[in-house]
Image 1 (cartoon, rainbow, N blue to C red):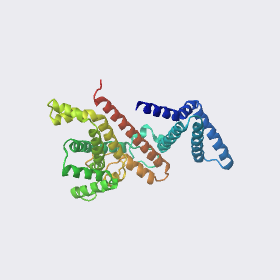
Image 2 (cartoon, rainbow, N blue to C red; image 1 turned 120 degrees about the vertical axis):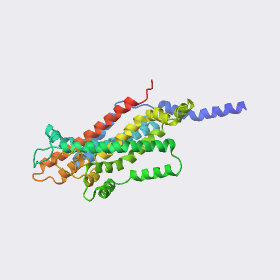
Image 3 (cartoon, helix red, strand yellow; image 1 turned 60 degrees about the vertical axis):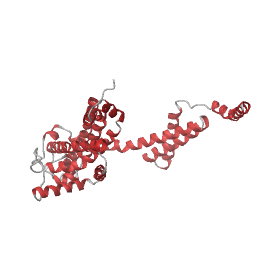
Image 4 (cartoon, rainbow, N blue to C red; image 1 turned 135 degrees about the horizontal axis):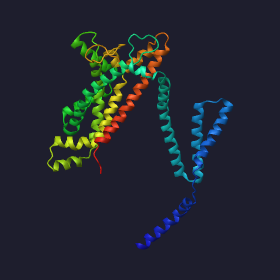
Amino acid sequence: MSIDTDRHSSDLATELAPDLRGLERRGQLPSWATPAALGAAAVVVGGLLAITGFSVGLFVVGTVVVFAVGLYVLSRVVEGRRKATDRLVTIVVTSAFLVALVPLFSVVITVVGYGITRFDAQFFTNSMRGIVGEGGGAYHAIMGTLIITLLAAVMSIPVGTLTAIYLVEYGKGRLARAITFFVDVMTGIPSIVAGLFAVALFTLLLGPGARLGFAGAVALSVLMIPVVVRSTEEMLKIVPNELREAAFALGVPKWRTILKVVIPTSIAGIASGVTIAIARVIGETAPLLVTVGITTGLNLNPFDGRMSTLPVFAYYSYTQPGVPPEPSLDRAWTAALVLIILVMLLNLVARLIARLFAPKTR
């Protein structure tokens, strides 16, 4: 038995010897080979397009294709199939990532380029009451956006968080399945449907033609609640059950375990989910257009009369610019820039909250 095993091992080693020697002979491309291949591909594609007609899009795509094929062939000859495949996949993944960044950078550059024109003190301190043409600002719209979004968050965050806690920690049976189903349905409803729901509700309560900021907050909360529920639910699910069991073993009640163990452990993810939900609704135009309307003056009371919001302000400024159109278009781009800044600030606040309230690891 031992003799047969030794003979089999010897035969296997003999068969693998050429392959092992081949692996030992494989070289490795120098560190400058990748940028050199990319530069050569750019020169080749640029030279061909200079003859046939230059195009930035064709130049970028052609350079990436020639670079990928050339580096794969070169690596296949020098380094072998596995390393060449690894390099090819790396190029494909990196290219896909850069393509995904193009629209993001394009939007940011465009909005900043056009919006910086009216990014001044007057834009943040004046309203549009009595303004025709140049001048004026979006102070009334900024305040309206902050008030309505704050009201929507106050209504949505507790409801969404408590619903998620129920589904993860307590929910079983038909009620939990029904809630999950309706949350899934609400996640996909169009924003205009939420606006029409709020209009119908307040028409029944206050009569036809009712337009007020609280109605807009209700419409936004309809869009915000399912996002909060879904994100919070996923964060609670990834909390290890061992933490719950350890608390139960110490005699801690379930509600206190949730309050002192589960939520602090997942607070970073919950804060990120809430931020995503707020960012989801802060730029909505359609529901605010039908529930809140538009006004040129400042109104800080969401329970009385129309209010102005940044999305609706930008929409009207861009679609109904007046004569001359340039001042209104500048205000529209600046309003879009302010919305982007607000979303960025919300993300920074979420990260700060996550850092302050996350459980300490040491």
